[in-house]
Length: 141
Length: 141
DNA sequence: CTTGACTCTGTAGTATGGTACAGGCTTGAT
DNA sequence: ATCAAGCCTGTACCATACTACAGAGTCAAG
Image (tube, rainbow over all chains, first blue to last red; front, side):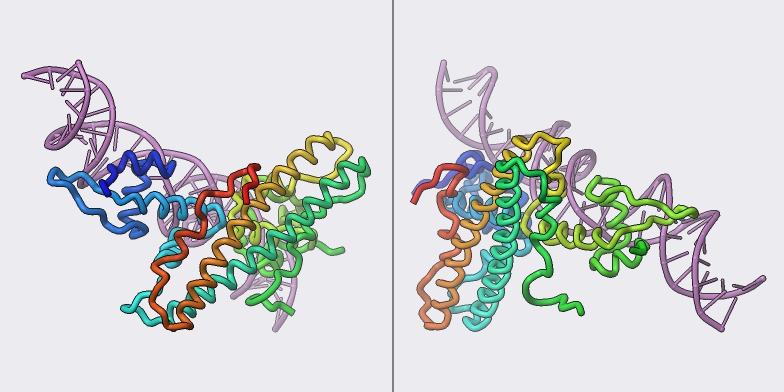
């Protein structure tokens, strides 16, 4: 497969060229091979990786967390138990996020419905949405 | 109800004092009443609001978006249709996030399972997780 | 009525995640 | 051969979301 230039990759992944170089510096992308003249040569797979990064950022993951997610893979070089433990921790994080998002969605749905009914009652149901943080840490009182 | 000082609020909401002042400046909190000597006097309800903000940030919402979420309420002063439209837009955003998180969770579960099975096969299933952005509005599948 | 913890305003600095040049080399089409 | 478009490195700058003082006033226990 013929390699892509950084510009083509940026276009396909809908990110800036500078962003790609930034991610490379930050270790989110493998250092690409270079042409004789020093141009980066990217495999098409990097486009998918960039799309993953963009999406994960929208979901509230930091670049640090995304780097961790991307480094998780079944690899004979790395202790499998370790990978499993990390994956399971991420799964728990994600479940918490989903629960919170569902609560937020429910609150917004109530609000939207109240609007439709033209009844000025609900003061601000959104604040009630994420009451009492489900799960781990901060088990105050 | 007796008001809380900024320090008490910070402690209960598990955020920094400076963060509260910052949120006030940024319009995420109502400007509190002041004591004769100029101390801020907070109602306990602000603690809940701060917890909401913290959680929403973890879910990938920016302070700007959170400000919008918090401003959504059934209020005779504001056009109900407008509030409903904004709430519905946020609901769509949230649904997209949930879909993405479920995909990511699925990929991680596969990875975790592969680890348990000690089969070094899956190269990096995570990258496949968020393929083809389920894209705003267009519901494929 | 002192003392230490707390609060005030204002300004400045930090971390994260990019974004924008400047100055120069490479490539590809004419 | 020329020349725009694209790539290179390096540095500087930006927005967001805090965080940390400095210097001064306030409160409350002893």
